[in-house]
Length: 339
Image 1 (cartoon, rainbow, N blue to C red):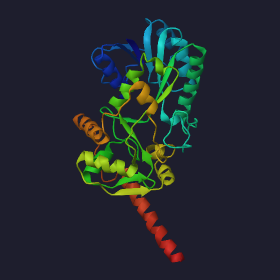
Image 2 (cartoon, rainbow, N blue to C red):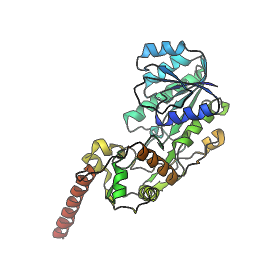
Image 3 (tube, helix red, strand yellow):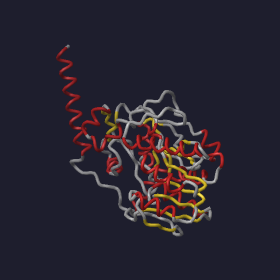
Image 4 (cartoon, rainbow, N blue to C red):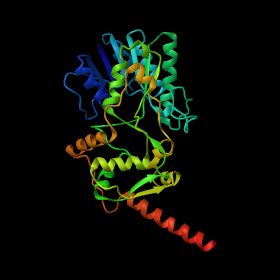
């Protein structure tokens, strides 16, 4: 197949590119050339900026016809409209990378199914909802055959391990040194993670797949675990004892560190588990990389590339923990005095 990937240098798209090349496809990546990448040898690089909108549409319509386009960096209604203008009548299929963040939180039922109502809680998610709606309309009109994939937390080599304070790799160093780890809420909300190799394989399987046209699929992890268990298994992967987990109310944590812990508000605090049955049936989606093995691989990659940030004596984590303990002690003292 002749496949164009819009983006091409991110975590998922790098794995997609590798898998496509391994099966013998002709792959072109469109990007600005500003992001350090791990592009496998054999992919063609096309420089372009999708936000130069008129130029993007003209550039895409000037390309040889593609069998499929995978858009990994479509985030807004304007981006989707550009795709429709650029590719309608010129590609057999567009595969759109959406997100499970399009859904209401909390869900009306668990696990989430693909027909759960939209209810985005962030600008990012609202943009993806707008894209999905425009693509669905284009598909219904017969302008563009669209397949939508909705990943959740995707991790792997080239990425990092998320936690309640975001993406900082300082978390790994703190684990190794036995320093306390902040956990939002009581740590009992459910979470899933999926290795990038498995997510990418679903994108590859969707290409040319007639059953996938006009449909949306979850491509998410299936090892449902609480956040407390999440940290326990990271410790297992690192070969270290589990440090103390310090539980802090989510709303308070978000107020204390909005930049680092902001994602806990609209996302981490809710049960986030998904039914992958449709992707298993139509795309052959399977989990082949267990979480603990995937963490080992991801951390090994971070270590090999010098990406694990050292923790220090005045980490944000420690300042928050110290403040929380003072507040907790004051609450217990004042409540005891009141009784």
